[in-house]
Structure formats: C-alpha cells, structure tokens
Image (cartoon, rainbow, N blue to C red):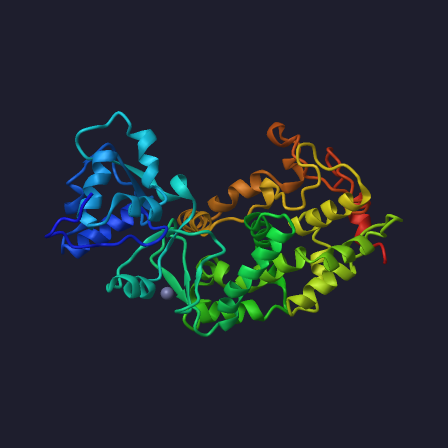
Length: 417
Ligand SMILES: [Zn+2]
C-alpha cells in the first residue's frame, strides 16, 4: 500500500489493538469511530459490558481487503501494521472466505492475543502528538509506565479508570525496573518469566485476601489510599480490587526474586529436615527470611502455616525435587506449575462478583460457598488434580487429606523446629 496524498498518517503503537487504531484514525479525521467503521461490512456486533456500554477491549479482525483499507487510511505500509498489531494476521483464518469487500469481525481482545490494558495517554501523546485513549496487548508484569509514573489498568473490566497515579509510590515504579532483572534471572534458571510471575502473583494475591485480618500490615493500606487519590475508605471493596495489582506489585516482584534465589531454596530444604524429613516448622527459616525480604518480619509464621496456598505447594516441589520423590502425575515436580485453584482472580472477574453482590447480597459468594476447598478434590473433574501435599512429609498424595484436627496438616503446624 502506497501512501495516498490526502490521507493523514496514523502510525500504530506497538502491541495496539486494531480496534484502538481504528478509533485513533477516526479521531485524526475528526470523525466518530462508528462513522469510520461503516467503511467495513461487519459480520457481528461489537461486544459490550453486561448492562450496556462499549468494551474498550473489543478487538476487530479484518479480511485482506479490510486490512488494505485500514493501511490506506493510516497512510502506513501493511507490513508495519503487521509488526505492530498482534491481531493483524488473526483475521486470515476466520475471514478467508470473505474476499472482495472489506469485512470485519468483532472479538474480545483477551481471546485474540492475550491480556489488554489501557495505554499511557502521555506516552501516546509523545509518540503521536495527541493524548488519545489507546488499548494495547500487555502482559501483567508490564503495567507501570516508568516515564510517567502511571499504573495502566486492565481494559477488560467494567470500570472507568484507565490508570492509577504512582507518583507518590516510587517503590512501584522501581519494582517495574527490578522486574527486568528478575525476568533475566528466571531465564538463567531455565524458568519461564511469565510462569514465575504468575506464581509470585498468586502467592501475594492470597496474602492480599488474608491481609484484611493482619493488624501489622500497614504498607498496603497506605499505598491503597494513595492510588485512590488520598482515601479509599469510601469505597474500600472496590478500591481493593481496582488498586490491588498496583499496590502489591513490589511484593510480587520481590517474591519472584526470592523464589528464584538458590539460597532461599536451600532454606526450604533445611526447614524440611534435609536428609532427615520432618514437618515444616511454623517458624521455618525460609518463610521468616521471605518476610524479612518483604520488609515484614512478622509475616513468616503466617506464610508458613497457610497450608492450602501456592507458596507451600512451591516449597513441596522444591523439597520433592531434592529428595528425588515423585510429584503429581503429568506435572512431576515443576515448581512453577500453578494449580488451577491457585490462579489469581482478575480485576474484571472480581468486579463482576462485587456488582452481583451489590444487586443481590450474598449471590456473588455463592459459588465459593457451594464448593468448599476441602471437598473440591472429590469432584470427578478434580479427582486427579494433585491438590494434596501432605505438608509434614511433602509427599504428593492423590487422596483427600483428613480435615479433622489431628490430620497430618493440623499436626504439622504445631511441630516445633
Ligand atoms: Zn507514559
């Protein structure tokens, strides 16, 4: 596609959604996006949020004629768009039969090429001259704009904010810089950075839920008030969801770093009795040291006794690897394997639950109450899921753990070092 005189040039942002680019092109011509979109034939309707409202994470797939049309409108070569826009090539398979007219198909970004977040408007202005909204595919570990001190929020949630202000929270921006070196450390250790991040995120997200009861936790509340513009108290439930990932990002990066540290793995091994297996102590050195690395000397025993969590599951893998013992079928002892029930919930998912709760109190938590964690392992779909480490011996046990007092888990928490 050659550049047409009369067309204004609109360069794509790296990782941008095609839908976001079309909106910016429309704005460049002083048009509403829907007016410009009438240049394509659409095979379905744009996805909306429950209860109405356009979804910013809506994505479009275009056929060859549709892509050619957009490239012309942008005044940019098609191969430039192909390199910048992750969904560019996705249209081929879905729209192969559509030749001739420019045709488009609506999708949700997350289902096309991964999580989508709002772009930093100040960065967009720097690149394009206009501080327009942009939506980009962005992994969850790349959400702080280091240049402008902004946390860029997921674009798939039904809430109006695009970013949180990090200017009072230099530690969050610093953590974004630190993540780069943690990711390199992961690669050197032959671990995939995204899996290490997901595990660390799950560990910290679980603490985040428990932290409402932690009287000594003062760092997170302070940060949360800060990202809420001074006071999150008026709508604490909502702010705890919207602000969570930004507020605890420094801890996620610190936990990821700690889990990759061979000296920390050595402490896990020592806590387990090394060659002479024993119950993991409640005041084990690994968890104590982990708490210290997070600036929370008191956290160790709380982390060490959270037996159903992803941290103990990781410790179990580390110990079994050293012992040469077998792990869950199909997963062996991959320390970075995150069990389904440990995956952290997303902001969009939590907001949906919260909104249902508000409409019909109690309804949003029904699904949790319906399947208590202790019985989840007995459902047919989960019966082979390796959910049970005996926490005293760290052996994988494919059967349900006793939940009554005196079961091996209950006993291990009280065994002294
Ligand atoms: Zn920026």
